[in-house]
Image (tube, rainbow, N blue to C red):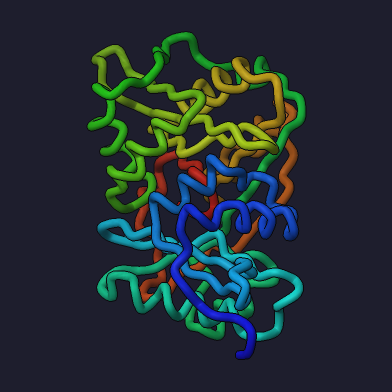
Length: 285
């Protein structure tokens, strides 16, 4: 292909990546979030001969799985096979012994299927401009407190059950990035859930959130939305959405999207389906 070159993307490319994300109407990708993405993963992309980034895709490698996300191609350079070339590069770079997952947009799904990805589930997105926290009707017996560094081992262990893979390094960095960080414990002081709230230009992204039971999940959400006056976003696995849909709607949320959760080198999700699990973002899974 003339006039474009593939290369590794770095923090120096953030201004171009902000412009690229705005072009495709992905408002969550500001400087802070892009810094988080680039420092947690490996990014490849194409740029023009004068250096302007016109596509990107990231790989996030964990111990039992890897995730591909933030796949964007400028409208000015679509139809050239750039997405396919970036995904092929990331698949070669990933650990060949573990599954690779991604959340597919409508435009991206046919490309991923041709590469060999198969649908393993669905990710449901809920958003709210204003909320009604009292709709959650949570039990008063759940103890919530701000999470700190001493809580990291139990948070990492619960996140591994929710995500199906150890993400210790990512969790530590995500906790530093979070505007809100909560942990839930039972009467025996055992960790039963946790949640981070990440502020973006568009909304407060609640996730990752993992909880052992519905009341704990709802208590964490209620506490976070009660502390925040702006728009809220939740991305969750289908099992969680099915169990919480009516309550979320009553609390002011609307389901805005259902995306394919796709996988290659595997067919079944690795997480514990009994847990209530919300994604940190669709890029990180």
